[in-house]
Picture 1 (spheres, helix red, strand yellow):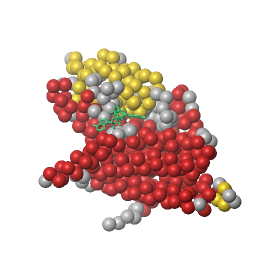
Picture 2 (tube, protein in one colour):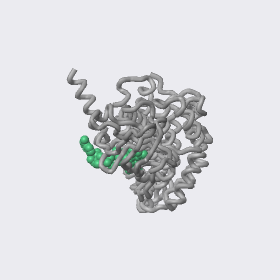
Picture 3 (cartoon, helix red, strand yellow):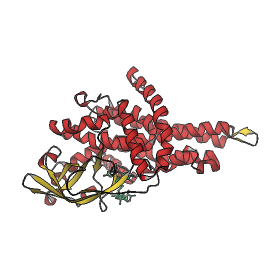
Picture 4 (cartoon, protein in one colour):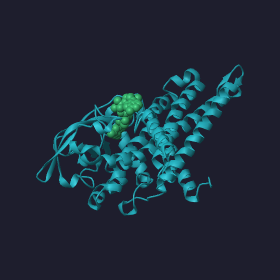
Length: 390
Ligand SMILES: Cc1cc2nc3c(=O)[nH]c(=O)nc-3n(C[C@H](O)[C@H](O)[C@H](O)COP(=O)(O)OP(=O)(O)OC[C@H]3O[C@@H](n4cnc5c(N)ncnc54)[C@H](O)[C@@H]3O)c2cc1C
């Protein structure tokens, strides 16, 4: 087993670290404290900045403007983006990943040609609309409907917690076209442009963390889209969404990793500088052991993420369960690590002037978004039980 990076991966790490610390990190506190209108402007600028170094095209093929690099390279770059600004990671990921990935995997050549170049260039912003007020973990309980009307489809329902909702030009919307067929064959994914009649965006949610990434409800009120808006085939939407979320879990694990790494670096720096009882606080074992524990958890999370990314790339049948393990461990570790980082800062960790205060609030989302910790445990346990049954 070879744990070393290729030259290309090393250069991606260096380039992204340099770019993100210079261009993205200084804007993270601004995004965190900005008004709703300012957030929309600043995050669009950050998405455009990330496009300029090719981040949004890493998932995508050359013919649409991407570089289609391996998944481990994407994780390496993603960690640097998340470390600099978790909100930018989330909004960029919702656009080029949650919207762009199903387009790549299931879209027709016309759909890819129409949307992917804009997404990759950061000129077009995408969103992914699965969750509804009554259907989160239980995604099959969505109530949004799609009814065929001549050459059009009429969508009715609402989506909630949609990352990029307020800034998205186009949103992938999952709706039942045939409730009797069940989720596996009766849900279709539609590419809905914001100009579609009956498409409305709700107010941005006032969130605890990830305040720089706008989130809102979306309303579909006799929303009319052409037949060409169907992603791939009718009736495949739920399976397409679940496959997209398998990639998304590697993404959520990566954002947790970036947050955790930022916490460790901040705690390390602060504990060197802060003195108590005549010594830097990192000379006290209670503090230095926290740094050690943080490092171990980060290393394990990183290895689990690399394993999940590699397995996905190699079409390993265990890839989905590896993604759940990585997401679960990385996100739960990140909340613990963020808490330790605040503790190392004492009272200063509790005020907004210090980045760990924001990182602490941001960390929690990892345990909720793209499948809660509870549901990851359900999936992992189900896989173990299935093996025991053999
Ligand atoms: C900031 C943010 C951004 C988001 N972005 C998007 C997006 O872009 N697109 C999108 O579609 N969605 C998005 N989501 C939604 C997110 O995926 C859901 O919030 C998540 O799946 C949980 O659903 P829920 O909030 O309805 O909680 P619920 O499903 O109501 O869960 C509540 C609690 O019950 C537990 N629970 C539920 N079922 C079970 C079970 N079977 N076994 C054990 N425990 C269970 C859960 O783990 C949780 O602890 C976002 C959410 C947030 C907060």
